[in-house]
Image (cartoon, rainbow, N blue to C red):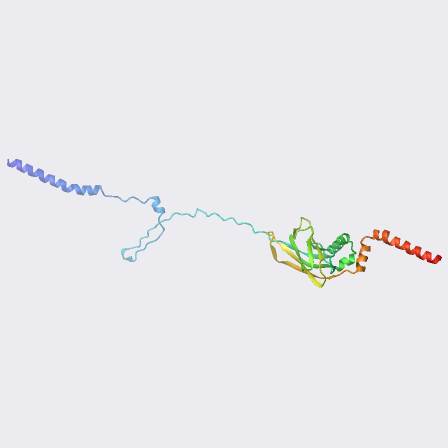
Length: 273
């Protein structure tokens, strides 16, 4: 009986020792072993050196953190628009034909021309053209011709300004803004002026402007030319002489020939008597 009790006590003691060792073993089995750093972890860190404040623990340890290199991503280069070519100009001349004496209620043709030609050639061409159009002698045209040097751009504008209480102005056959065609050297503007009242002195202004590609006036590209005009009342004799010189053929056949015939017959009759 005693033997059985001793055997039972030994079994109980052995069982207790087994239960005490089990937690330790489980703690060992559940230990987490740190995994090596992965590539993603390395790439998201920064390259920074950390040095301990106190150097008593031995050599300083350097920890490296690495960042992802984005230098291969090149930013797109912005498109640069080429600069617009500046409006070029060359030296030329403004020519104006405007009679300095006008008659009330008579029509007057006014001409402005911008030319790239040499001045003497430009004057000769304009005088020739006007003498054909106006049936006037070249000397009278040259006396009423005015000129001014200016910068000539590809696109030009000419404006006529006058006292509208004195003149009636009509623009004929041309826009205020004109452009040179390839190879073209002259631009022309024309107006019809009719004085409605008599004046001793009045000023007619001609404004010449260079125009850019956006149809805007070019700074420092403006010139002005002034003509002083006198308006008179036409006398009877001036009207009569203008009528006779207006159509020479009619004057000779309808007036001069009959007048000479009459005077010749009259004097012959008196001599025979």
